[in-house]
Image (cartoon, rainbow, N blue to C red):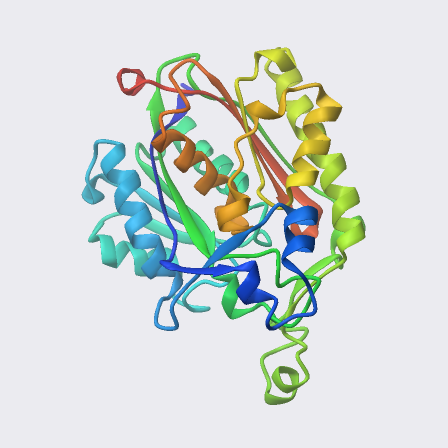
Length: 335
């Protein structure tokens, strides 16, 4: 029998160090005005040299678990989604499992190219809850972009920051939790438009490092065209799949890539911008953590209430996208 999956607890963690645009532009031919006007970003958080991804993930995970009203030992599965995880092997999910002392759970990592990861990971977790395989799934998404971004590259250095968001999914009553979801990709269009090297094609070698072949690259014009198309497409698709009108959607939590992209999408849909929760002005784009951190912060502020319809939209590298429509749960809705 199919069960509904609801988000029972949220958490997030941002490194303490703040890098403002004024500091950033000392290293790159750019201006504070350009970054704020074009992206809506004023500052971002930067991990300390001794902080690995799992160090950021641990407090975010603990917060989500506590808010879900369970213990680490209750977790059945940990899913970690990031590009720049602790190691190639073992999985960072297994490293986090050890830190949490979540002794008996399964654990694996997911890499869908960074930014699309928030919704991809939630949809993966949704399947395990709905089919009855697991009862408590911890999803942790985020990035330490500061280790892989070339700070002197105008096309990327102003966009990104470090941070992690986390969610615990549990079974909930009928009609609540995740109402519908979708995933998609267009690799033919987007496989080369956002790239992070360091794999088998362009491996880590002394020569590749010295020639800066391992940096993040991005085609800004292609990304803008994709983002302004896919954001309203996903929101419309989720509404249609769930037989909802656009004005019935209470909150939009979009990928925090570019404030103008969000404004364009909301205007095209005819949805007031006030329904979109954004925080890229202070955290920038945290990749797979983007939507998760924004959702966790909105929940922590008490903005999202039970019975409200919350739409999550993530998209990015590979020109992949994901969407989740949630009828937000009260604590009494979980079973």
